[in-house]
Length: 176
Image 1 (tube, helix red, strand yellow):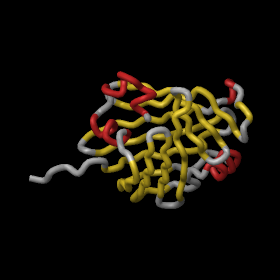
Image 2 (tube, one colour; image 1 turned 30 degrees about the vertical axis):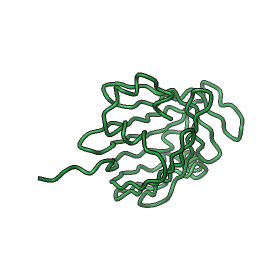
Image 3 (tube, one colour; image 1 turned 90 degrees about the vertical axis):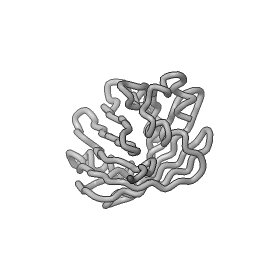
Image 4 (cartoon, helix red, strand yellow; image 1 turned 120 degrees about the vertical axis):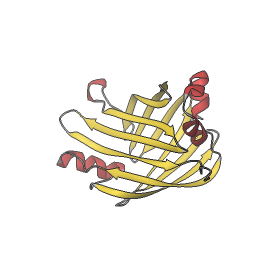
């Protein structure tokens, strides 16, 4: 799905990032994550609607992936909660359904990293005005058989709603 959206730019991604996004079927990955708390009471309420972490934490993450050619279910088991989203390929674009929100992303490659750029957002089916779109940092990079991720989302006047960083082991490395 990501390869379809990105076209030739997909080949610029680090090998563990490519391997992760070429996965088909069901797979469980493990790694480590650090989560951040929402910045304000309104941010906390939004995080509750989205299923993103509500408390700062650090610990093991279990990631369940169910990948079909045009749809992926992502279930992230953080140390303090579980968050689920569904990625879909629609008209050459990647969408993510997260709780009551539908996000539309453009994908790019920068120095071997996958960078997701938010293009549009609908909450309860209502389009978000451009001026109110959240600032989202969503990047993945790969090294040593791991996929490293950074995700942060903040809204004007509300502050950070979600933030987490960590890694998933994508490929077992050979031990000498």
